[in-house]
Amino acid sequence: MLMIAVTGSASGSIASIKPDLQGSPASHYTRGLQNTKDYRQLAGSNFTHQSVLTSYLSNDELEPYMRGYVDRCGHMARMFSLGKSKENRELWALELSNNPGATEAKPNTRYVGNMHGDEPASRQLLLGLAEWLCQYHTTDSRAAEIVNGMHLYLVPTVNPDGFDLRQRHNVEDVDLNRDFPDPLLLGTTGLQPTGIEQPETLALMQWMSETHFVASASLHEGAVVANYPWDGMTDPNNTYSASPDDATFRHLASVYANAHTHMHDSIEFAGGITNGAQWYPISGGMQDWAYVSGQCMELTVEVSQDKWPAADLLPGLFATNLPALLAFPLAAAFSGLRGDVHQLLPTAPENATDNDIPLPAIIMVEGIDHVIHASALGNYYRPLAPGSYNVSAALQGYATVSAEIKVPMDGSGVVYDFALPCTTCNRGSTSWGTMYDEEGVHIRAAVYAFLVVAGGAWVLYALWWWCRAHRHSLYLGRRSKATSV
Image (cartoon, rainbow, N blue to C red; front, side):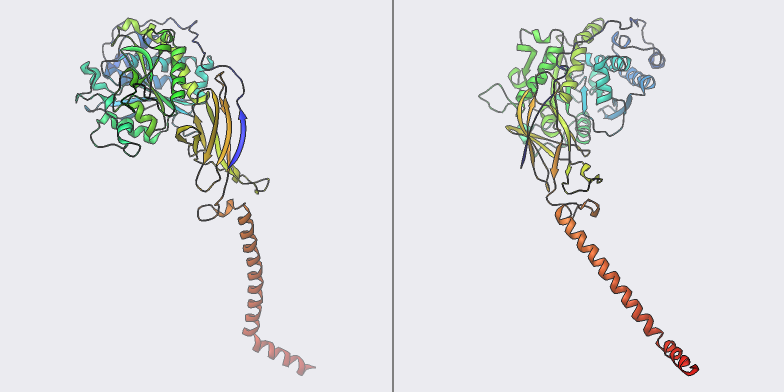
C-alpha cells in the first residue's frame, strides 16, 4: 500500500456565495394562459426566470413550456422523459450543461420536485432556476461553473397525477416518498425493485441505476429546513439516526441552509438543518435509498412553511432559495475531494500513453463505512466535510494507493489523482499493447527471440526444399559443363 500526503489549495469559498439579483430584467407576465398553444408561443419569446414565477403551470402547459425552453436554450439544455406516471403522463426532465447528452468526466447533480402532489412550489422554482441559469451563465460565475463544470438535472414533477388531484399521494393513493426499498430494513442486498413499487418510483430507481449522481435534493413544502439521512431508525433507543457520512451530510445541509436567506435562523431547527429520523422517522424514503443504492448524497429540502403557497409568493420564494439552489450542487461536487484514477505503469517508455488508462476504482475513506466508485472514465467526486482524511483507491488487480487528504474550510476542495500500479496485467485481460511491466518485457523478449530463430529456420528449410526439388536439373547442369570442357 502506497501512502502519500496532500492538502487542498485555497480559493474562493463556495459555501458562502450569495445571489446577485441586481439588474435582473423586470419582465412581468400577468395575462392568463388560455391554452397550450398560447403558452408555447410565449415560451418561445423573450422569456425570463421572472416570467415563470407568476403562476402554476398545469400538466398540459408544462411540456410545451419545457420544449420552448429547449428551443431557446438548446445550447445548454436537453429535455427527456424518465418514464410515465400511473396515468400515463410523461415525467419530464431537463439536463443543463454546456455539452448536454454527452458522457463526460464531470459530476452529475440533480433536483427533484413535486414528489408530493400538494407541494407544487418546486415545479416553478426549478423552472425558474433553469431560466436563471440560461440567462446568466455567461455573466455570473456560479451559473458558469454549474453549466460548464457539471451536468445538472431538473425534474419539475415526479407526481403529476397527484398534482392534478391536489393530493399528497399519487393516483393509487401511495406516498412516493415511502415507496422505495428501505436499506435499513432490507440491507444493501435488498435494494432492487420488489415489483410493488409505483411506476413513478420505478422510473426514478431506473434513472439512478443508469446515471451516477454525486448529490441530489428533493424539494418539499411544510417547513423551512434541510433534512439529511438517515430518515429511518437504526436504533429504537436513539432518535438521532446517523449515517456513515453524518458529518458530510450535516455539512451539505448547512451549505444549503446558510446560503438560504433565513433558513439558518430557524427557531425550530438549529442552524436550519435536521436529521430525518430525529424530526420524524419514516421508512421507504428516497434519500436513504439513493445514498446506499446510488452512492448519492441526497437531502430532502423543505422550501416553504405553507403547502401550495399562493402564486404571488413564488418570486419571493425563488429569491430566498436561489443562492442555496446554486450553492448546494457546487459544494457537493467541488468542495470535497475529486480527481481521477488511472493505471500506473512505471516501466512504460517515455512516449507511452497506456499509463492514462482510466480505472473505475473504489474510493474508500478511513472511518466512513461507505464507498463510492470512480466512473468508467476514471473521474470521481467524493463529498466530504472540511477535515483530514485517509483516502484509498482500490481495484482488483491493482495495488491499493492511500493518501492523506486535508479538505480546507474555504470550500475550494482538494483535487487528487490516484495512480494504481498494476499487479496482474497481461494475465488474461490486458492487451499485448499495454505490456510494460517486468513480466511483459520478458515475455516480449522471448517472443521476439522466437520469431528471429523461427524465421532463420524457415529460411534454411526453404533453401533445402528448393535444392531437393531442383537436384536433377542441377546435376544435369554440372554434367553439361564438364562435357564442354
